[in-house]
Image (cartoon, rainbow, N blue to C red; front, side):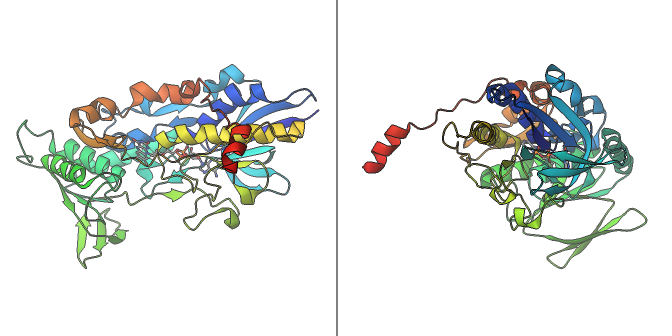
Length: 421
Ligand SMILES: Cc1cc2nc3c(=O)[nH]c(=O)nc-3n(C[C@H](O)[C@H](O)[C@H](O)COP(=O)(O)OP(=O)(O)OC[C@H]3O[C@@H](n4cnc5c(N)ncnc54)[C@H](O)[C@@H]3O)c2cc1C
């Protein structure tokens, strides 16, 4: 008789989804004839799930985005499976594939070894700006927001680096907060309080979206008093003791800003993993079909933004997670019963033009499934509350994965017939 632990590193969108999926759908289908039992352990630095999607508005205004809407306790969301679920507040600091164990530094400074039969890496990514990453507790991020909001109150020049969705969203939120909402027909604020500039390394913003959507985004930003500088990279940004930041640009110019927000990309949280498990972008290198981390030994999987298989984003996880969890189920059945119950399930990336980007509280741009969305729809889906009303609670309590995402394995007889031509 043995207890098999499914250890999940990371407690955000991917880790929480994987834990609910394992408890609701995977474990009930695993063999118990030999007395095997199964548990899920999650390791995450914060005990609260952070609704990162709302970071651009939360950073700027606690009136518009109070912390009560941003953070959701993780452990109570698993009360329905409390005999099988353990939450450890801490960070993984090392993984040993030979002994199948992970070293964890807990919030209280204790070092723990946690064994696994299956390991799911869901440690995500960090942003260069502290405004969009919860590194420790919710309280720490709330303090970061309060400090930022104080400095924003008197700022006259703000530079946002990075023309991706986070850069566009935060530039819009800052510009509207400082310069106000423009009149119905206005193309720019009459008397702007602050000069906001968004710097894009590319000739357009929002790489996933077509050019005319980027142009529409620039128009909406302009209405709020934010200009866009294209084809310009941030070479360096140095903050002086005064708080001002000097920003060196690739065109040779230097600008000085009261506030600089670095939204130039993300960095995978993989420093605790063996270097051989990573790809050349420091993401967890996995089989792009099965989401197994093949270099890591048996029963190691990756889900979410930290994986090499994905261009990132929460929507993609709805396609990836059932794949990783089906293959994990297959592998655990093979371990206990000695025979895999079927073939691998395969992930297929949805690379359609798909992104929704609010610009301030009233406008926005985007596309879904390759179709351009009108601004009012962007507002209705995301801009009014950054999707908290629809999705935050179902994400944390597991309702997003209430049903198993069904899959019918290909019929082996049919496959054999086809391969014979
Ligand atoms: C400002 C912003 C807005 C966004 N808006 C959207 C949007 O509108 N739509 C969309 O689809 N996507 C959006 N994204 C992307 C989306 O947030 C990511 O796709 C999502 O957060 C990825 O989820 P994840 O669980 O893979 O990783 P993360 O959310 O990065 O979470 C990783 C978790 O692992 C924890 N962790 C890190 N290191 C360790 C360790 N060593 N041990 C244990 N735990 C660890 C972290 O603390 C964190 O809790 C946005 C991103 C940002 C930054």
